[in-house]
Figure 1 (tube, rainbow, N blue to C red):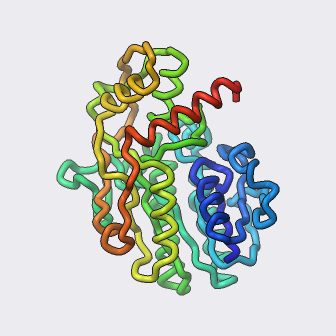
Figure 2 (tube, rainbow, N blue to C red):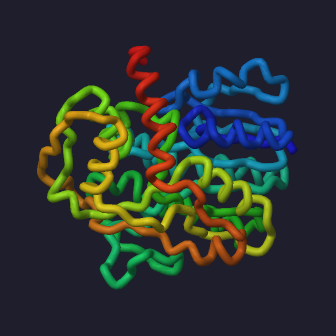
Length: 314
């Protein structure tokens, strides 16, 4: 097939490029390089099945493809709060442009949504099932991302109901791995960079808030399985249900890096979720999918990647 990936030079997008090219498809990678990096796809440039298109998903585009994966949007608080208006425009206008293109050429289109649509979940909704409507502050500093992704899901469902567009929606839970930006402000990259540089490791609050960390290869496998089955359109949770406190993550990073870093505590950011764990029963039932890489296993190549990037000064 001929497949478009918006945000294809980003952390997850570049891994998806690798996977789809490996499966024998022709891949068009679209990116405006706000958070995506050319180095993430540099190794693909000589592949005749790969094409790189510098384009902003908020601007209309026409492509002749069989499938579209919409991964375009800054996904870390540091990046999406840098220009919140641009962030919500990317989610909403990007969704409209992807859906319009899919409608025109009768392509299947995939929306990379997020567990952030659940907001700060009610304790009774733990782990979070796809049926949960969420607890999101619509005017908070995170809402440009949270509400942008919620609006994108609305657009996907309405294009499907009104125009018959063939859609798939995934809700991504915390994911990590090589090619994350060292300065993206996400907890895994923060801790690893701080540990490798011998700086204090910064924990917000007491570190008892929980997250579930999915290795990128497991997530991409879930993407491809969801996209290429016909039983459900989603939304579907894809993530690792193994739940860890932020303090536990910091201790694992210190142990694996051999760092002498100390753990320090700072004030908790506004609207920071206290718990985050996916209910993946739908993915298990429909896709036969569940994560295979443990946090301890996944941290090893991730730490090695950051060690190389930091030593190169990039």
